[in-house]
Image 1 (cartoon, one colour):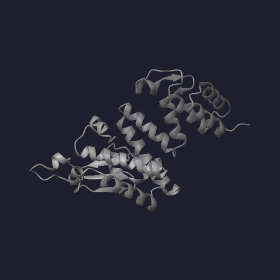
Image 2 (cartoon, rainbow, N blue to C red):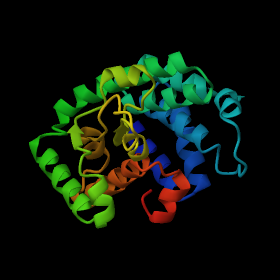
Image 3 (spheres, rainbow, N blue to C red):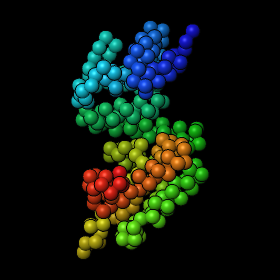
Image 4 (cartoon, helix red, strand yellow):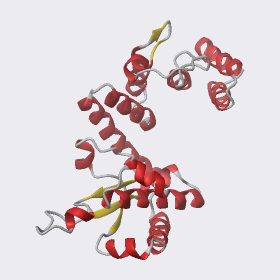
Length: 250
């Protein structure tokens, strides 16, 4: 007999290949034979995120969250899933993001704090963010900074690039993304050049475990470190997202 794991793998492959028949077949089998399984729950969630292969128009988050058929709604499946499998940080993260879209900030914060706690626990179990990862990320960061044009490098000479494992709990309590790759904190270059001394030093932070968890291959990790540093440098210079895109910094 086909297992729930095998059916979910077929479901995921169908999604990737835009194979509607395969997706619907795997989902129907999960509903029929493994109704209470984690795999069925994940398939229901993923199916609703992509709105079903036949739907082309985007919909508002509020409509997507509450849209209900005979099998339930996206919001319902997300909430049910984290209740039944509280250690599933990926689904908690999705639920927190959806809560933000629904302007339920307190609920989003609670989910993302739980994500942070679970991710920290999972880091230790999976040996993510260890000394080798840190050395690699620091080296990749140094290479990015050394390749900057001299004008930018001079202006950034007093801005340290730090590596931390995950965002601080205090930041996440304020609504910061627990899976962010980086952070720019402090006054911008223009603010720092004023007559009054800045209230706090500027720094750029790279979140080691977030980067290493999402990019286990060194080549892709190095690319993402570059993207992240350039993006945060752009914030330091007060650039808008469009400016960073034009410079290739996003």
